[in-house]
Length: 109
Image: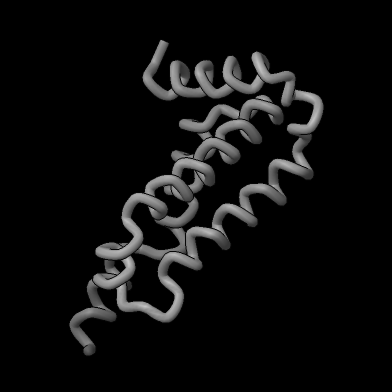
């Protein structure tokens, strides 16, 4: 079992023990991801990056964990292979945003 699979198993076991599976449908999980991401944004609102990190690091870590937990749970509910979909997206982004264009943009600044 990979570390990611082990983590997903721990998340699923946690929610099964609490009988949360019935409320963890794809729609509600997607909503929860958005809510948790908004809570993460609040930690940075009206602050510089440095101020936000200095003042809110503990909460930033918790909100990132919430986003990841809900995202992994959604992948589990949809029977998606996390590693596969992330690698596919990186490949797609590589075609959309080639390195040579990034390097040229940097040089023209």
